[in-house]
Image (cartoon, rainbow, N blue to C red; front, side, top):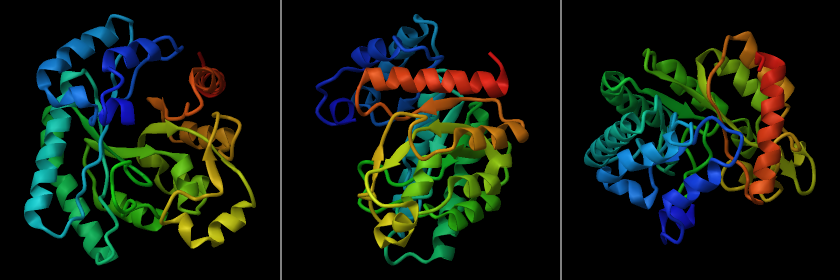
Length: 284
């Protein structure tokens, strides 16, 4: 992230050539890539990806809709529309939205109302571009001060229930539920009928138990020190339970791999695990 979004020490074309070596169908994009600020670059990156027989189905971005200032929120809505344009230009169909930051002065009711109003303002524009906005049960954008407002499942599910539009759905991330000290299967069963995309990742406990994690106040306010990224299929997530529920509700769409912090070998093993599991539940 730092190399592609902050210091430019890696170029997007290099990242693409690295990623397409994996047995994948597409690349999830991040709106904060430095080279994406200039829309004249968009067509070239799409062409490079498609030349390898891959697509760019999903856009990862982080609008902040819970700021108390109306002008700030208006600017965030315009940024989301820019990212919708980016998604459309890259040939994608799914663009992330978030609630915003969990600012200390923000009440739950106010936060839900602000986030829902901003998302609803973006939806007609997304629909006009053939893009579905996907809200993720997120932890925290890499460059935010505070965690996600709707990190906890009760708030997240209330926000999802407040918005009904054909161009809106959920991007489910089981690992982020652990960061909230909660159960990813419980969350999934609350929102599975709204899930349209998924982030596949995994976490493992470096020490202690899940109950220890839930007792820690920091489980909701910072990266839990007990948890670490890991190879998919080797950690806490029960992919059989997850895929059983997704299959039950008719899910059949993009699953994006988030992990690989320990290099390409780890990513290759994660891809192989998911290919095998997808084959078990949806067929080859």
